[in-house]
Length: 230
Image 1: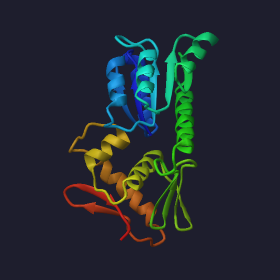
Image 2 (image 1 turned 90 degrees about the vertical axis):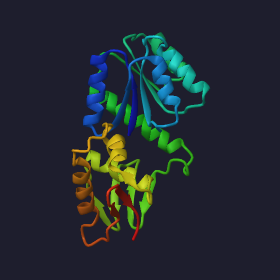
Image 3 (image 1 turned 180 degrees about the horizontal axis):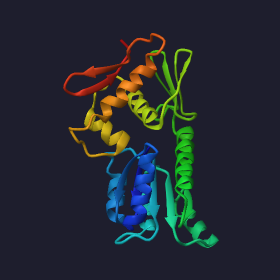
Image 4 (image 1 turned 30 degrees about the vertical axis):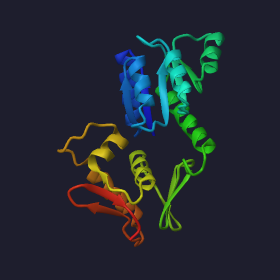
């Protein structure tokens, strides 16, 4: 899952960003409303959810929400606020937020709420735009139940393995560079010295080829990897 976090408090932002990345999600952080709105509406990144603080400098959370909805950006938004009254929560939801979480909050609850929003979005989008079931040859991945299978064999995946396999399947037939994979799965700036991509690709190959299955994840020498049948 790719998440945009718009939060001006660096401690809270760091807590959220570190927690989401620890769970295997890719995260972008913006510290004020105008840059958050630009990032959400740039079209360069297809975010699965936005974590939006209410009290932001220059443009507050309501302004960011209004700007997103005016541009018909459907990305689900989880609003954060220290304002805990029923009226405050109702105002946030009526303004276009999909959920409202009061500070302070537990990281586990924030992650659970974001996953619920992402699942809800997958089931309500047009199937052609966001299929729940991804396939390549006899490899299938169910984005809703978060289960993978090769033929009749279930594949147990760790969080980042699931995120990478999903990324490969969404882009089947397209060469993905190591920089693209790092940015999508880890949210990191590319470091040519790291071999983390090669390590996780090796694990995915071992898991998807267990039982004698043919190779689906191929190396593109000097560039990265591609998932294709044959």
